[in-house]
Image 1 (cartoon, rainbow, N blue to C red):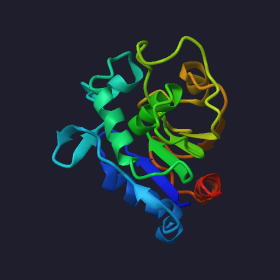
Image 2: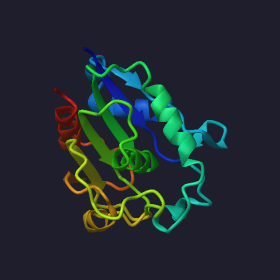
Image 3: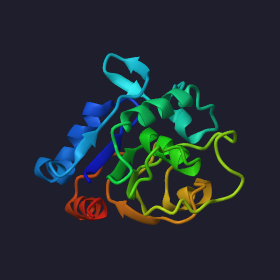
Length: 197
């Protein structure tokens, strides 16, 4: 049995960017306890900047939009987990658009391996009605949602997440910054605790 950590990056990031940010947050030595899986989104924005699906502009996150090519994103994530065995422990940290992708996959039970615990940081986006279910569901997995108190651009707040999310049960915490992977010690310790067996 081994421990795996799946990292799902945000829009205009890539797998290396989120790995670097999470490494700084929880420390590289802490991550040595995991096999890190950090795939790149299929949608190329420019050079090394990626997305999981296309958006006309970042402002589209908080407006109804089509999740164009989201099926490709799901296939990439599923393929990245092909070596994870059923007896292994899978943890997930998603940021921004990567959080929304994770939510879609959790709601529709699209992970080939059931995660042990999930952390969603700054989940942003209104779900396309074709992708979500008609009522909230209990995914049966411990879920921690982390939202910045200064999340100005994307209109994310505890209240909006509670209203827009189709996941029924989760813990929610705030940090003092905006739309970022937070670096404060409280959040660092919380995430470390959350993804530890």
